[in-house]
Image 1 (cartoon, one colour):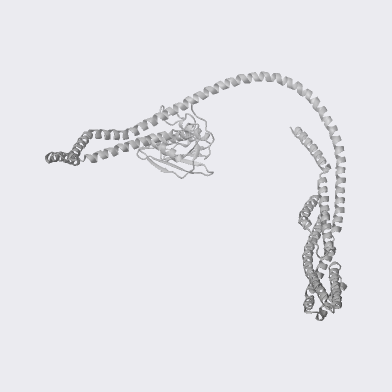
Image 2 (spheres, helix red, strand yellow):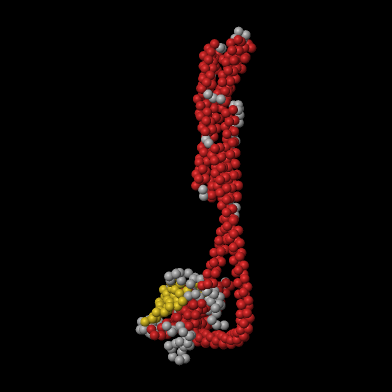
Length: 602
């Protein structure tokens, strides 16, 4: 046995080594390598787009469009994917480089956004200044056409305006201190010469200082942001990371190639070993084949013996089941005889009420019929209206005499009481029949959700003749419905209540029936008595079939055995506690959801 286990463990170890070498030799990082190269290419495209947009913003005309936002919007997913793929490589150097590349791109993105905002503001104020210069030129041109004396000065003014216009555009494209100084000088000269011109030119020339001052104020911020933007080393970091990834993937490829060599040599050695194992198995197969031939012959004889023995056991089991059914049927007939005698006695008493009441009512019906006939005759005379007073008085006197006689004898009261007694008897009979129907209303093997409190009430009514001289106390708690066969469970309750009644004296006997929830969620039913108790030496035998302490002919010894089997088939249990001279308590535990009980009898 130990050798077999060791061989199995050896085989598992060999297969595990082969699987590990195979996994380590596979090029599983090719997809990751492709994705990383794609991410670096996307970052390079984003960086190129940013550089192109910023360069265009500093070189195009004032009327140029702002750059598109697509690279900024797709930057974060690319950075996240690159970080995820790099983390899978488990390289501290590459992870640090990715963090630096991420920070550089995020910084550059921030600078791009700031540059766009500042550059847009600069364009706005620059457009305003250029628009004001264009307006002044148009006004000067109109004055030159209408006033020939002012034309030479206006032409000189136009030249100054054009020079300032060129300086402003140059300041936007190639800013430096000399250009800024030239813009300030040209603006100051135009403002100072404003007094030499008519009112239509003087006011706009004086107002040039404000928009040009805004341009000079905002232009340095845009220039500074552009310089900071170009200083961020994103392209360098991309190149460094690209080289690092190339080295990493080359190292991985070299390692996998080494594992492939190991796999080839290991597979060859394993094939040689497997060939040896197959040869050994062939030798073993020959020996096993001879042994199987011998076993086959022995099995044929054994099967014949087993078939004969099985047939004998089946016949014995069949006879045993028939005997069990007969014993169960005997117990049922015994219990049925006691129950029928008690029910017959319980029905006879209210039936006597009904019979006596109906007989008394029958005796008095002629008096009532005579009185009704005289009343009807009196009503007929009154309806005619032409009856003589003497005849009407005589008829009224007869009716009054009958009525007075009926009241004097209190027959109306007697009939009402007789009717009430009869109805009370019928109600008692109905209650007994209803409880008898509830007691055995369902098929024995059919599961239903059943209220055990109602089952106990019906059982106490059925067993009323046996417990009517006892003191019966009920303590029913609020319990859930139990899934069971009500007919079988009622049979258990009837057996326990009957045993309690038989174990107590008529005058001082006390029986207590209670329900509640036990630990674990099961429903418990307690049937207690203050009877003679069960000796300890026979307490463990009371659930055995045919065991009884009653006299011969008074019990079969199957009641508690059948009750125990019913509860057990429902997934429950019965416990008993007893002290001699103090009484006995039977406790039934039933799960809320029971198993399908098998019928105990046909």
